[in-house]
Image (cartoon, rainbow, N blue to C red; front, side):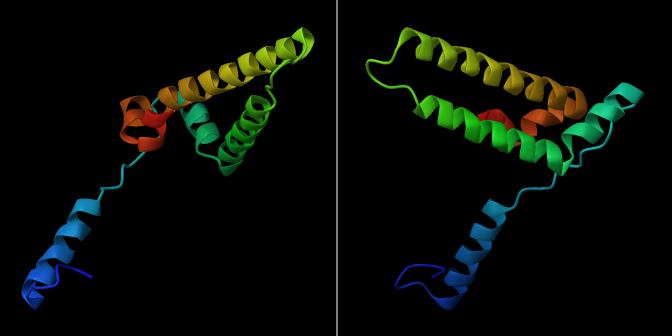
Amino acid sequence: NGGGLFATDEQKLWTQAQRVMLNFRPEILLTPGRTKFEQIVFKIVTRTAFAVFIAVVICCNILVLSLEHYDQSQQFASVLENLNWVFSVIFLIEALLKLIAFKLKYFKSGWNIFD
């Protein structure tokens, strides 16, 4: 609908234009770093396989988090805690690699800020 019930056609058009402008986000150009190491890291973190790997790790983390239950054995709790540490280390490495590859542009992505 582009406006209220009593809006004129021009007001509706203006409202639609404002919505488009509010949703516009300039694309952030990500470029490889200067050093060979930064270029290698950039290639790794921009690959689809890397994103898929992280998505699989996130799903596994969710599964492990959902396994915690009342009256679980100490051994089971210890396994869950250790798995949680493994996931935390993987996510830390992901963030560090992306910081190396993208530098401060890392913080321009809403997903990275959310992480």
